[in-house]
Length: 203
Ligand code: MG
Image (tube, rainbow, N blue to C red; front, side, top):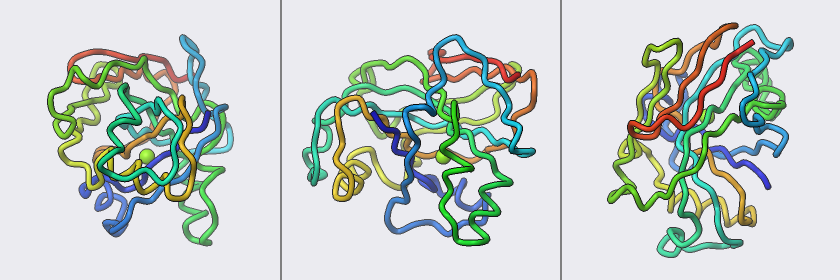
């Protein structure tokens, strides 16, 4: 399986990093080795001094497809969760400066912890799904799919023009504002609506 990540999908987050608001989705990939095995701590990598958290809604693809039309895209996923797109912000800044790809800042081992998946049908409106991140019992990020620039269906239509989607693939759909640095000993808790789907410690 592969992990597809959408960048800059919330206006307020694009603004906080001084990035332009995109007119087409921006995406990049993480390998399957970016998943954090269940019940493991996250070990702060030694190659960065500015590791940032980005909490995101994550959808799971349930059927293979390419060139998927937006009007059929809803048939390609039925489960949702929340995850962290860990980013070595210092390495990413250097990549951006030089116009280089972001993999060393985004695709490293365990950079994509994801919670357990839930039926998306529990939400009557896919454009109103709240989620949040607590660190050490304090809310750090709160988002809602209503604020996404590109919807789940638009993302699937766009990405599948370039990359075949396979059953089991995951799509991180972008982070709302409020990203910030992770610290050693932080306790992360990720919520979909009011339900906690993942927790782990940073060591
Ligand atoms: Mg992200």
